[in-house]
Image (cartoon, rainbow, N blue to C red; front, top):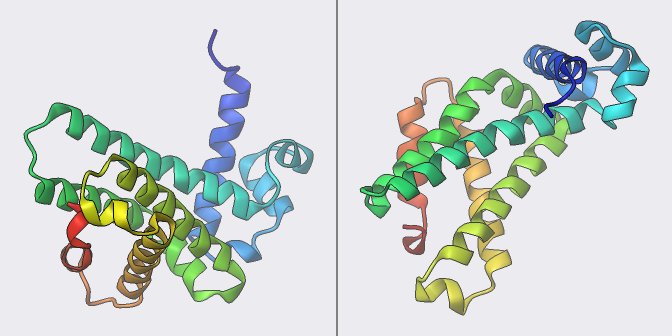
Length: 188
């Protein structure tokens, strides 16, 4: 049996509303009342599902990043890609995500009150890095503290995204090239 269509509609309404509003200003400045009004539901409905607008926004962004990871897994299963090609394609998928949500990230990264979004991005990349290392057979991965390694790479990638968003002259290719150039040798 599928999900209740009303619940699905409400979820999508909240997701659209938070992305629209967070694309206009920092999520820390979005009220639950405003978000519920934009979604066409009550504040109580919001609180039945979410804690804060930031929690909802992180959920939406994580779901989009997970779709990119699903694409990566499909490519791995398909085979035929070199490690360098996979690194470039996977990095490109993340950059595509950031490009789609560029206004959201720009507002959040410029507002110190929205540091939670940056930290969520770092947490996501750290978790991804740990999962990547769990599959790795590279000797350097086994010899070092993987939590520290994953955090190092995650902060670097999130920092590269922040620098890219702050430079209107930098292209998506610039971000991909820089991230790939900075990837540790064991990543591929």
